Length: 65
Image (cartoon, rainbow, N blue to C red; front, side):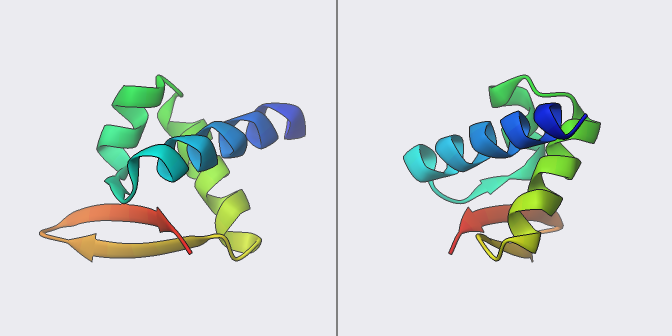
């Protein structure tokens, strides 16, 4: 399971590095990672201190620090 989460975290990091701040909904659509693994990957990156998470117009948005 940690391989799946680690891979999701890597894909999320690469997407955000290329595209900048993105809503979690758009991140899920564009990466085609299922919602549970998106949340797990975000948690992984947040634990490592690599993400900034904020609410913009009622949408959870993530970006790299």
